[in-house]
Length: 126
Image 1 (cartoon, one colour):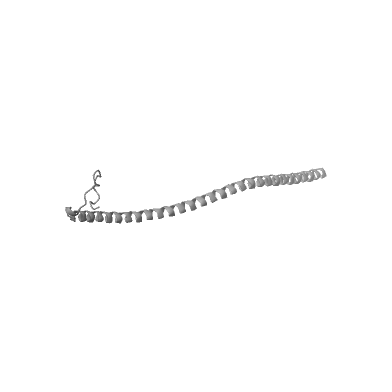
Image 2 (cartoon, helix red, strand yellow):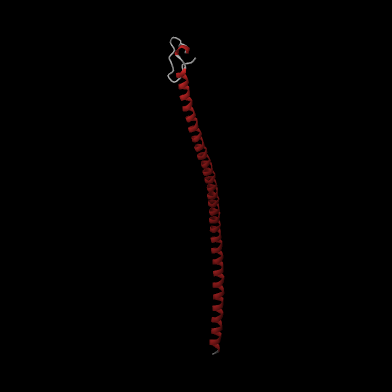
């Protein structure tokens, strides 16, 4: 019975040493995996941060461009309205000028010099 106790104590000791070695190896492997993962996660975080900065810059540029585009559209509408007003005034002026030209008697009109061609849209007063 004493030999069986000695063998069982030795087996228990070997089992404890085996557990201790397995635990130590497990901790080393976990540390290596942790370092490996942190290294890769760090590069991934840096890449994600760079992409976020690029997206933020792109959004800012798009906002600026859309605001500029809105301003240009507003100016184009204003210019279109102004051009329409100028065209209407020009048409009225052309009508009045034609009426004025038609109201001048022929005896008060100056003769055109030889070789000059009349401009059909221009009044005949010189």
